Length: 289
Ligand SMILES: CC/C=C\CCC/C=C/C(=O)SCCNC(=O)CCNC(=O)[C@H](O)C(C)(C)COP(=O)(O)OP(=O)(O)OC[C@H]1O[C@@H](n2cnc3c(N)ncnc32)[C@H](O)[C@@H]1OP(=O)(O)O
Image (cartoon, rainbow, N blue to C red):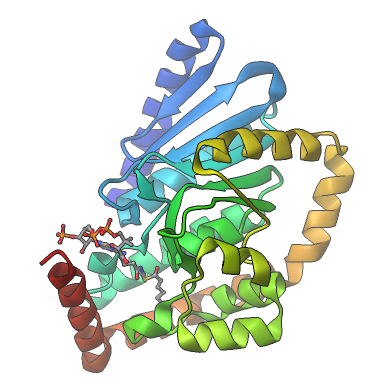
């Protein structure tokens, strides 16, 4: 209930801000954790995640992200979105571990519903989505990138990308897996999911997790030039083709959303899983020394 009210407020506040800033030509609207800048005639929006320190996808961040996408989807002048990060060196650390640890089942269910919602909206978007991956992109961060039509990644060996859930003692849900298989093929996905592989850029390119590597300072300009190429295709044929390619994967979740929420809630509530998450969080802390 509280979240629905927050959502209405955000939509309203966002549109007021959007109107005010349209005066400058380039329009922008911002929630606390997501900044969207649109650039008039080209019909392209740049969406920047800014949930420091690591752009983890907290419930608030997911909600703001979903609302921003919804607004762009409803704006018929917008045909494409470049998804990137404002946090230096991090695209997104993925789902927020603190939303999945030490909470109650109702919270897990609410959180998962929102994860599903963002995924469905991103994956089935009619807009052209290009990710400009300017930092580390584990698990849910990789998921965001995989939803895009094209992935440009900064060629910095410090950055890795992949579905690493098994390293945390948890399991990537079937719809994460389906999208991975669609992107890199069954054999590679099978191996990478079991090992929880986080691919450095060159390997990510080789296996097909990303489409192109560029020097870090060129990620944004490359994403723009890729977008220009995709914008040259008529929307209706591109959209119908995208829908044809993605519908079965999206429908697979749509038809069992409630069961998937229940499955997540009971899995994540298990003592053994909570213990694994606790150990992983401790490891993250210790890393700092
Ligand atoms: C049936 C289905 C069941 C389950 C399905 C669940 C699917 C789950 C999907 C996920 O996305 S799980 C999340 C996976 N993410 C990770 O494994 C990333 C973990 N983080 C890192 O590896 C690193 O933090 C980093 C992203 C590479 C950044 O490293 P850096 O050195 O720059 O930062 P640092 O590690 O010091 O972190 C700063 C701060 O942020 C906290 N943190 C990091 N990641 C997360 C996260 N995903 N959620 C919440 N918090 C996170 C970290 O603990 C530090 O906190 P502190 O300052 O309080 O110590």
